[in-house]
Image 1: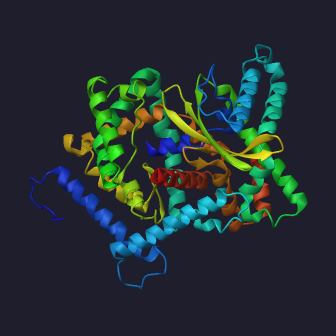
Image 2: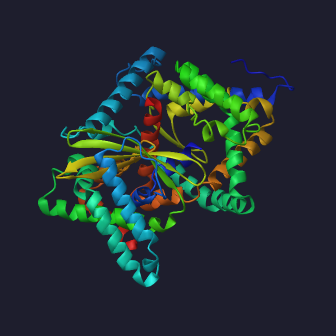
Image 3: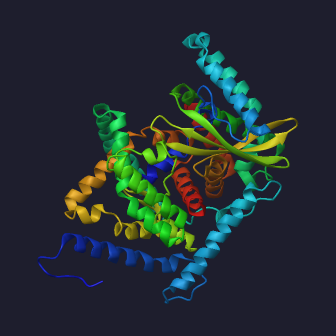
Length: 204
Length: 281
């Protein structure tokens, strides 16, 4: 039971963002919540657009999804936090490369999942913001009536709130990647990490 | 615990004895692995272990907070992860479990899932969860969580009656009363015992020394262990529960593997974060 719940705790990023169905109950709708909801609805619109269902337009659909996700997800912050103390040791060139690799990894991993949407809906539970940082709490209700608590960690970027981390059932995606990357860097090297990232991306 | 040598000794007692010995053995193996603060040769006293555990837990929470606080330079991440001195063995068992999942558990669960409709399987899951109420209730009480104990009592009565012996969950559906998910591992964590080290059991999956001891403790609260005393039958019941649960979440392990650069670390870290969160809740 625990094993399954824990596996579920690594639900896809985009699947979490898009799992919204019809009207959603909005409790304590703050600014960050509203913006996340808007993005989610935009994504849904793309996914359910009958014109884009055609497999010939799959690439176009992916590009659209990526554009929408780019508006709401802070790849740079996520990438830097996932490297943690190894980030400051990198050159600017390496940092740029890593941000691209990391965002490609997330995109490649989760893009296929967006078609798996099957009627789940989202309950917006609450929002805590403190200055430029905050947390938006939601619950995803699955088809088997399980309620999965999800937290979006957000920060203010100009006028908008952007997500830099997603926690599912208390498991933070960034922390999870950080542990993996840290382990690989300590065992071999940062260059090896980059090699493994590229190899994994090549397989997709 | 006195070992019974009688030929008519109860199989349940035999099993409890074996498990108890294993648990004691594993607790004493704690000694060389729990750091250098103790002198060699002396088993840690319970209060000492608790202090060490509470320091470990406190550090975990502190670091966790530091990591999420913006602007704070990130501290040594090694404190944040669960100690894993048994990594080579754990990795081996990770491979074992991987094969077990793809070669046995998944085919079984998928086949079962094709034959049995989903609502039925959800009801079975509800039933097993319902029967495990004593585990949750007692652990709520042990953590002085009277609200949780009250919740579980209410849920038990409502789901036994309206929910038809627990196959349905009107307590949640109609009255929105959530389960108070507690177990003995969390109780130990509540009292400051850290995970100590990561153990990846074959077939059973990820755990920690503390949580394994917790499972042993919960075994004494699990009604199945009293109702079904024959070991093969008990194993069959537990296996059925596992197959049923798996059938409701096929794909999540595959997703973990696909998303991760190092699936072993991904699972270990997810387990650790998940348990930390459950303890603080």
